[in-house]
Length: 254
Ligand code: NDP
Ligand code: 8X3
Image (cartoon, rainbow, N blue to C red; front, side, top):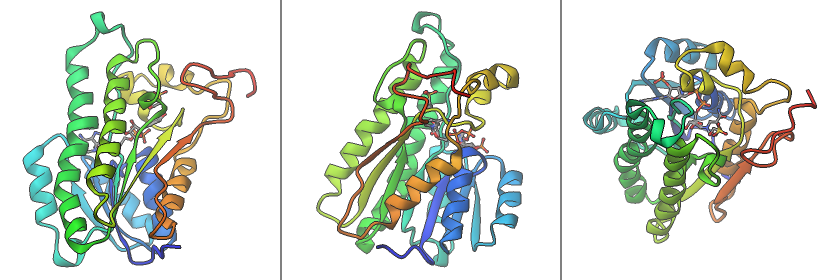
């Protein structure tokens, strides 16, 4: 198994949900954490409770210059990133494509695709140079299926799927591993962001069944990272037991 003690793990979107849970789970196994997000106040509170060696990055992954500068300016004892968890992401709205909000599209494309690309482009060369590293992308069931009104969000997660496969091909000559962890419905702030802060509407998404938690997903992420160096967990699809596909959810089992 790969010993994760003292490994340097960069988690984007560590201020909430799946990213925050990944930070907690990696901290438990003794990793050192670079926590990145726009809400630095939240990162500070999370870091205080982690009991792990942490470095905080106030980072908007949409901002290409900010990403390049933040990664290249990491202090020497934080610069050799072992594991990159490309988690920062969001959805905006549910609407038919021809009625969609174009600003929301930009937000999703700029975060889920371009943000992931900027961070990957800044971090992976160091991994290749050092001959070691692991990139773990947080995809989605929405990267495997398209559901009604999910058009652009699903497209961004299909793009993440293509980029994961492309990275794995391009890195085959190096020991750097590439994994995608693709969750179904996880109760986080995801739906609150999708519905622009409407908590009541967001909560209805998870009513009537037991959704995944961020911790459930983090367990898969850390398990994939713990495998021996010659093992790549290429893809994990993780669903609540009440979910069988993007559109098939049994909302009557509580
Ligand atoms: P949350 O809304 O709880 O967390 C999203 C995280 O992304 C926050 O920490 C947020 O931090 C960060 N983020 C958003 N935009 C940016 C940005 N421009 N720059 C830096 N960080 C950013 O949602 P989840 O935890 O659910 O989402 C995490 C990932 O999981 C996303 O990629 C999402 O698509 C994916 N996913 C979620 C599922 C779900 O059902 N919840 C299912 C499948 C996949 P801040 O606002 O502080 O910048
Ligand atoms: C998030 C899960 O089903 O809302 O990727 O797309 S879903």
